[in-house]
Every structure is written in structure tokens, then in C-alpha cells.
Image (cartoon, rainbow, N blue to C red; front, side):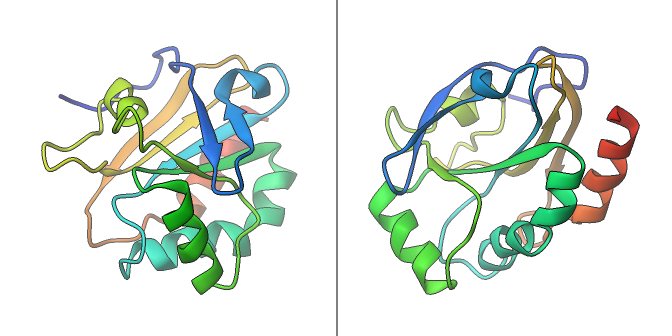
Length: 154
């Protein structure tokens, strides 16, 4: 299985945030670019730096008309405890818990171990994947790369 490539239509999905709010990719179509940030496992060191980095750079993402959605396979209650342990975040942290990893599978990033790759998908307002990266599990992705790509979509 390999990650969906740029130029591919992004599969729609509906997932819930840790507070029970439901998000669908299609709700942003025609309105905002979307960064899907798949993360392997909550409470791990790299994930616990990656997700707050979106909080810290949120003004930059918003200025680029981009909604950041973090997606992990943990249960919503576990995500809530994790987010609270990090001092909170201001982006949705969505649960791909059940059916287990279904969205990660659609995007080609569910590992055989049962958790997603550390993968990023930048999706334009028309719903097309513009950037697709699978990063090393132990390396935090660089937000600046995404922000540079967003400039190309303006």
C-alpha cells in the first residue's frame, strides 16, 4: 500500500474530534485548503511535538486559508487526555478508531502494525491532493514545507 499521490482526488470522510464534534473533509470544499496530518500514536514524543506545532503556527495556516486536521487511530477519550496533557490544542484531533484505521487505509498510510504513517496531505479547495509526504516515524515534519506549498495555491 502506498500513499495517495498528488493530483488524486482526496477521499471524503467523516470523523469525530475528541469533543464529539463531527468533521467531514467535504465541508471545506470550495472554502478552505486542508492539511491532513496523520500521526502514528498519541502520547509518543514526536507526536507530542508535532501536533502542538500546528497550534503554534495556526495563524500562519489560517493566513494561507488552510484548515489543519490531525488524524490518529486512538479513541476520542484517549485523544482528549493527550491533548489536555499538552496544554490543549486549537485544531481538531480526529479519531480514526472505528472502523479501525479506515481513513488511513483510504489514503494508503495505514501500516500493517495497525497505526498510520506520519503522513501529510495538502488538499486544495477543489478537493485535490497537492502534496503527499510520508515522513520518518521518529522525525517531526517541517511546517515550513507545507506553508511554502500553500503559497503556491494562493
